[in-house]
Length: 285
Image (tube, rainbow, N blue to C red; front, top):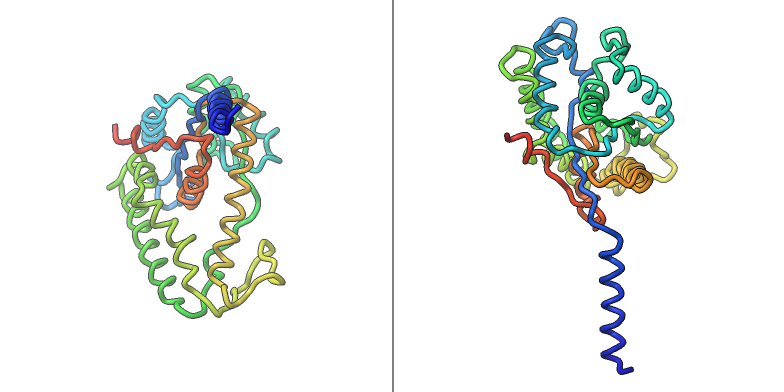
């Protein structure tokens, strides 16, 4: 057999093996604010338990429903899977009163549970991971003004949208849709994963237990913060892909806080086993 024949044979076997593994798994990363934190007792329109906001959430989930995921994952630690299983079973059988649950306003119950029940899914999967920290621990160093100014601009934009919800000028449906726009989560991504690298020669202010200060290099203080955020995202990604492998799902959905959207999208773009489905394609309808 000639060298050319060997190469053709190897290529054919490789292509066949790839096709035999099946199609890519679709994955939608659906962003949400933490709805329990959005609630302010003196701002009634932030209460997702009110009939008006229940209708708004229903409108939002109905827009996503045609995607028909066969796997729904949420930003809850896997250690709480048994608790989530129990609550979801009660929810499906109409025995769970969310207004009597301490965190009943959470997007896990308001969005993920609602979607899961409508789709007839038997389980909602927990894929969160410990880690992360506050962005505020980076407050000094060379070029810190770049980081501060960008952070202030992003906060102003978000505060403006939240105030519009509070004042009844922006529906909760449109607020959740706003979170899932590339212009929104890409700005968050830049602040958390790009801009900090420009900050050098500094120290963390009051780092929490998630920061192992013994291994922090002050020269690269901004990059060190990025690595903390990215480390957690890779753990979430690991939980996501192993859950998909276990369930053999073909159309997955992860409901996640907006801060993780850009980073997880960048990771999954490099995973050839997955096809990213943009929620905007459904929400613009």
